Image (cartoon, rainbow, N blue to C red; front, top):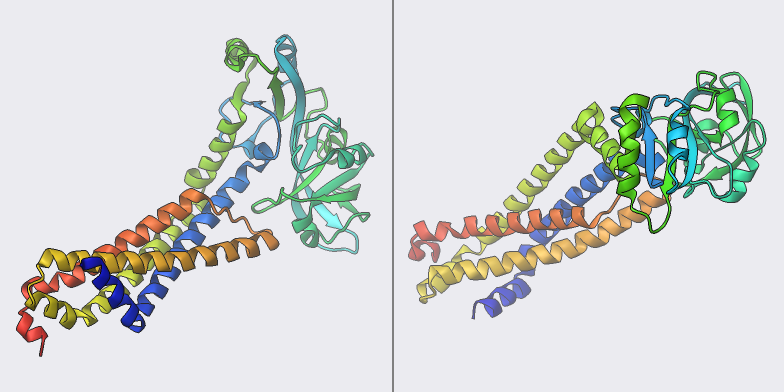
Length: 378
């Protein structure tokens, strides 16, 4: 009997519960959006790894995040080439520069990313297609992310200066928008020309390699690690390096901690608004619940009715929240905002909202235990 009563009450008293549904919807939207933004921002710190097809990265020992890489000596290549199971090896350079567009615009700090221009190269292979790599062989040729073109005041075919050296933008890419700075992708030779602090003796910031299909990667890594302490290098699977970079941004940088704090505040505010709105909605129906109690409905039955109502209100609000979240995700994608609408984020936000909704309603109905039904019926 409890379920029909709960549903019928919601249908006939929908005006009373409509604010509660709206509160749940916007509370879930707030939590989901904050979580998706947090994931998007921290995951942007590992773009060099996630947008490459390399299985393993070789870098300087103790590197905490991919953008903090230091020079690895060229001698490491001897160890890599000595492994018969290694199928592909290539360097990747990370430098810095000051971008100045034509027309006297102010400078913009950029990160110079030097990649191999061979058609089968794996560095940034997911964002720099083969045709653009071929154009990067031209001295001074660079590509930038389309979302950064306005910031750099440039478009394909334009010329600019990086550290006083002339470059030409040969194309735009999508998927390498940096958090604070701007990424400028070039060939290895052009990168060394633009940032002359980069090594020119075969050394690199990272060496990327894959393992032949059907081989045991752990065997290769174990053999290479025997030489790591002597030759001063460290090997990370791509997933591990991406996680390290994300965790560094999330827990070790001031920006990550601040955003976590802001997310927790948003979740707390959303939970409080939801609980207060639902408690008010249930409190307004106390005379009806008192009538049921006076008719002999046990208190446990009232709890069941209220929990059922809270669940329906929560589910209705979360359906609306899901639709709005998808809309915001589409808008974020349109404007290149780092917004990762992950299933775990949606699930956690939904669970928090549902738990808060049910607890708030049960706390409100708990007033009936101390109240005199006769007084509530007046």
